[in-house]
Image (tube, rainbow, N blue to C red):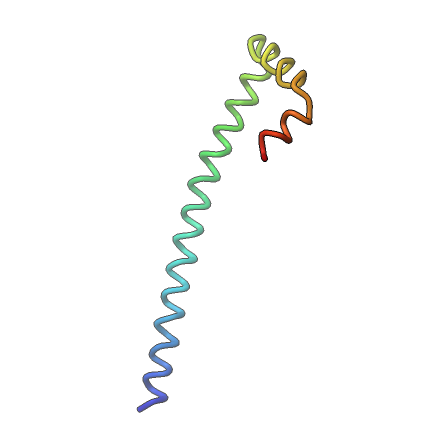
Length: 71
């Protein structure tokens, strides 16, 4: 009887892992598309005439200032 319960527990863990993996793939796919849309929008904004002034302002900040933001 112990082997039967052990096998049953293992099957339950495998099912749980499979469900978590499927949910993870679904979330990754959803947020991947959302992130791609955001990046595309940002790229379009930077390539426009209004975005060029924002780009030059961002470039003038310098790497040191950007590194300080992460601290």
